[in-house]
Length: 600
Image (cartoon, rainbow, N blue to C red; front, top):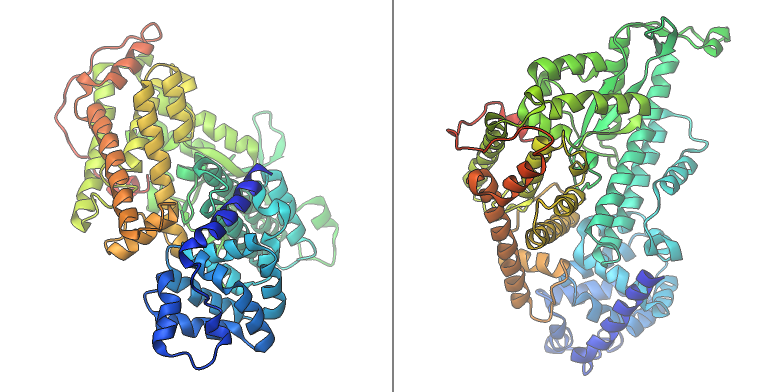
C-alpha cells in the first residue's frame, strides 16, 4: 500500500504542477471551431512539442466522434500536462493515437480516465517514455485494465505466483507450438508489469533485476518441460546405471551464468546458459505407459548423448525463435566448454575433465555466477559443487605471488581488450556496461577478489554484485566510503542501462550521442523536465563523477596491486587460513580467444 500511495502522490503532484499551464485551456482544440494556426501554436506551445502541427493532428485523431471528443476535452489539459513531463511528448501523442485506433472504446476509456488520474498518469508515462512498453499496450489495449488491478503494480509477484499464473495460461493447451506462444504472451505481459513498476519508481534496481531474473527462470523451466515432454514422446526417457548398478533416469539441468546466474538480469538481456546432464552412458527407453499403449508407436531408442543434444537444440530454439507473439529470450551459449564450437550439452564427467585439463582463469570468474534455473535440481547442484575446486583450487590451497599476479594480470588484459574495442567505436566514455568506470569494472573487481579469496572465505561469494559488495564491507575488505561509492555507482549505472534498453527493447549499453536523446534518457531516469537542458547537464555530471570514482578504484587494484588497500585487506583476511605473500608487478600479456571472454 505504501508504494501505491507513492504512485497516487505522483499523480497528485502532476496535477499541482499544472500551474504553468493554468492559463491555457487546450480543450478549445477539440471544442472550438475555426482556430487559426497561431491559436493552435499558442495553446500547445507550453507543453514542449517539437512539432506542434503534428501534435494537433494527433489530438484530433484521438478525439473520435462527438461524444468521445467531449470526454477527451475534459481530460485533455491533464493529459497534456502529464505528457509534457515525459521524455518524449511528441512520441507520447503518436502512441496515444495508435492506441486509440486499435479497437479501443473511446467513450468508455475517456470516461474511466476522467475518474482515474492515476491511470491517466500511468498511460502518459508509458507512452512518453518507452516505445516497447507502449507497443505492448497498443497490441493488447485491455492490458490497461489489468494494470489498474490493485495488486498488479503494488508488489512484485513471487516466483511461485508466476509459476501458478503460467501454469494457468498453459491449461488446456496441447500443441507444443501453442504452448510456446503462450510463454511468449506471458513474458510480454509480465515485462509490461516490471517495466511500468521500474519507470514509475515503484521498484528499485535490485527489485527490478530480481523480478526479471525470476521471470526468466520460470519461463526457461516451462520451456524445458514443454520440449522435454515432446522428446520423451518420440524417444522415451533417457536412462543410465548409477554407481550401484541401478537403472535410473538421466537428469538434465539448465545452469544460468552471467546476470541471470547472479539474479540480476536486465531489461533486454541475453540469458547465458550451460546445458549439463548426469551421464553419457545409457539410452532412452519407453516408459511403462508407452509400452502398454498398442495404438501408439513405440518410441525409438537413441543414445543419451544424442538425446540431450536434441534437447539442448530444441530448448534453445524454443526460447529464441521469433514469431508474431515475439520471443521468450535470446540465448548465449558461448560460456559452455569450448565455446561456440563445443557440444551444446555435456555430461557432468565431461565438464569435470574439461575444467581440470583445459579450464582458463577467466572461466573461474564466469563460474562464480553459475546457478541451476531449470531441469533437475540435483544435477544442477552437482555441477555447482563440481566446478568449485576449479574455481578456487589453487596449488596447495595457497595464494602465492604468481597466483594473485596471474589472476589480476589476466583480468586486466581482458578489460584492456574490451577497452580497445570501445575506443575503436568511440564508446569508451559512453558505454555504461563496458566503458571506463562502467558496470564491468565493478564486476571484474568483485570477481577477482572472490576467485582469490573465496576458497578460504566462502562468505565472500555472493552471486550478486550488490550482495558481494556488502560482504566485502562486512569482512573489512572495503571501507564504508569505498563500498558506498561502488554500490551507488552500480545501482546508478544499472538504472541507466535499464532506461536505455526499455525504449526499444534492444540490448544497448551506449549513451546516445544526440543531445536530444541524451536529455530524454535523463528524464526517464527522473531528472526534472522543467529545464531539459539542465537535466541533461546534471545527468552527465553525475555519470562522470560516478564512473571516474569507479575507474580510480579499479585501477588501484589492477594497475597498482602492491598499493591496493582492497587487495591488502583481502590477503590479510586469509592469513591464518593459507600462506600469502606480497603481490608484485608482472609483465602484461594479453590472452587469446577474446570472443568467449566477451560473453562475460
